[in-house]
Amino acid sequence: MPPAPALDAHLDVTVANAKESHPAVYLTATTVASPAAAALVVRSSHAQLVVVGSRGRGAVRGMLLGSVSQHLLRHSPATVVVVHPAV
Image (cartoon, rainbow, N blue to C red; front, side, top):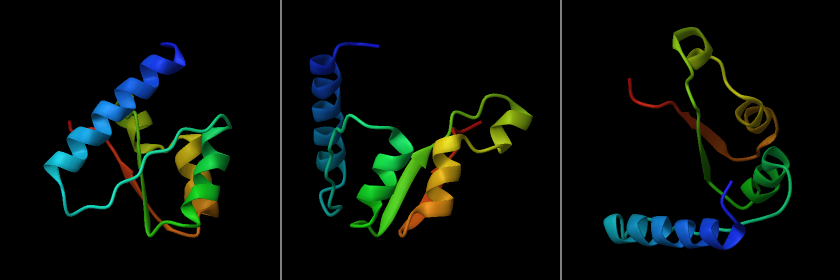
């Protein structure tokens, strides 16, 4: 995994590109040092929608949701969308 400054720089570029492409969409990005599932549930209490990705490893495994997605679907107060990669 790249060092934290490299990840922060990548996040900054990704967010800037998204904001430029979709100026009408309100977007914030935050990094936290805690388990992903728990952090997303806490942050989702202030969100209308939480979008998470899925790795989709193979036909059968691609239909299954990972532990973070499962945890969010069970515990998030916001609507959760799980996005699978295009086939």
